[in-house]
Length: 143
Image (cartoon, rainbow, N blue to C red):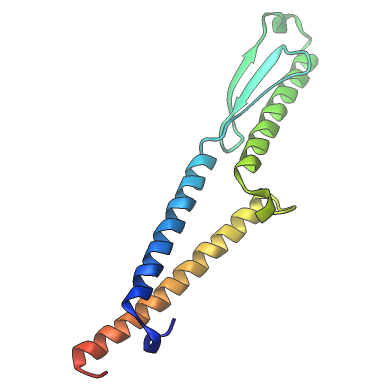
């Protein structure tokens, strides 16, 4: 939109669309921050929970775990943590519409999301600059 084609209804429409997009993005980002994952080892002796970042949040050992060899227990812990991380990653992907991001990693989606935010900010600044130009013209009496 350039300043010569400006109409007040355009501003209302842009503001409404922007508010709607920001609410939707904030909701999605909020949900992504709460996704946790749970998993257990093959034997069921070890259970793990990870937070939204995939970091270990809780680890539970079954009663018989104390009788396991150290190497075996270590493997069980790794299995449980990896299962929890896989569960967290799966839940995260389920929140994102797959048809919008076919075959893309979460990092790629995040990078593109950041690019969209940057592009949106740049366009909004351009529009605000155009509105400021119009305001100055109106204030100075130029039409």
